[in-house]
Image 1 (tube, rainbow, N blue to C red):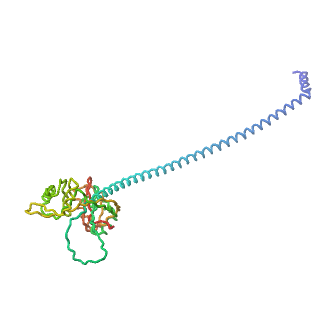
Image 2: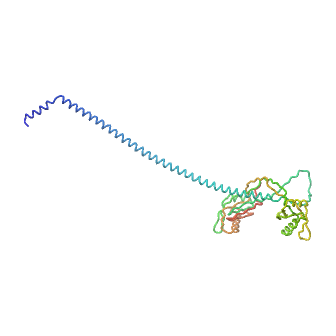
Image 3: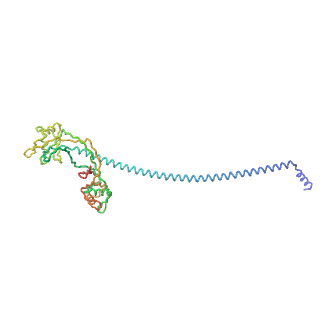
Length: 371
């Protein structure tokens, strides 16, 4: 390049106008301002990024905490559910137990109702007694006379299968056997486990009986001590004849406890006519007639009955007896076991065993609770 050209270039640069320099300076300032703005924006963006990271961390921590809380809640709910299920199972078991007790109570009630029915039937036995001449040799006083009646107990007790009743001589032995509850009875090389329980019997505490004369029946006493069937036949023949004041006979029944006879007629008017005469001569085929006494037959009807359940004082109920041998052999083993003092037993007055699948009625005549 020539010197002229260099001069010309310098001259052009050097001759730059002031206004251009100002514009350049202003442009530089504008760029600086933009640069500062960019730096400020960058700082704000960095702060926003940091805030976002912090928020994300907090959210993550919260999510973890919520997850833990949810897991703990689920575990707590599972525990609570297990507790409720356990309570429900206990309630179901208790309900089953109560249903079994209700069934046993209903069975016991049914047994008591049967016993009440039997007691009602027994109280309808005849109460009339034949006339008997007695000679009183005692002293007579003007004091008020009171009447006392002795009643023989006769309590019927229904026995289930697989049970036995033991009546001991002493009350203390029965109490001891019941207090032990469970007993193991050895049968050769094996043994059976029994449950000892008290015996609860139904007794009347108050009875009101209304009696009336039966219009169809008579009570015949003072009979000969001959063959019973022959006596019944002769009585039926005699009292069925109209010339003897009788009529058509419906039934003739011999009473074992009194050796008297009850005759039932078809018509109502026959019985009263016969009892008005009181004495009748009957031919029993012995060569001469015998005078018998005819009395009205009294029927009794219960008008009021109150009962109570009492514990037998000397009798124990054994339950859960399996059928492992003959009835008599097993009863003998039971009697031998409970007679031994080493087993808590003692002298036995009576024993009866009822095998599984059978039902029977036990009769209490002496071992009855006091009123």
